Image 1: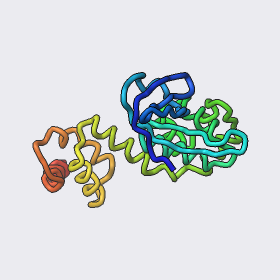
Image 2: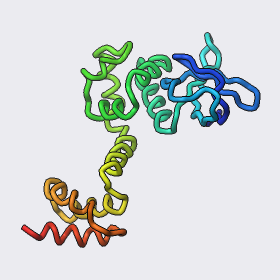
Image 3: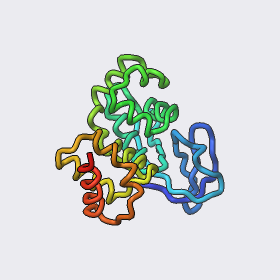
Image 4: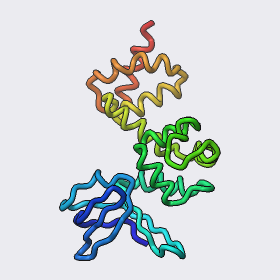
Length: 197
């Protein structure tokens, strides 16, 4: 089993890329072929699939998270590699994962080959199983808003102390501006703000 290829992107088409690894060109189907640049070195995370008709087919992804989402889609009854790839090609992985976690069946029917029955099956099989992926998205959003890992931990601690999300949301913009490095320092600042009614 291949985990990833690291090589030169020799060719790009609307459905696949060719990765040149030490002079051997591998045809790799990708949901995002144009994310790569021809002639440049890249790491492509690989999933192999074997069928009697086609033999081995390689599918490639920009990162482990996208590959993981592809494998989750394959676990859904009625979804094959081509369908999973088409779904991922039609929408970015982040939005797709969030739609599944929120049970948005109607939204999922936008994708090629996905009717209401298949969309419902995707939600039934995967809702609640993409938590790690969605948490990573939340962390990305927090980082974009200036929330450091230490502040993130402090906010969780304040929640564990019994403060409501509304109360925590009210003080978060102020904590972002605080000159603190550790979670403990943020917690102290947070408590002082929360105690000011």
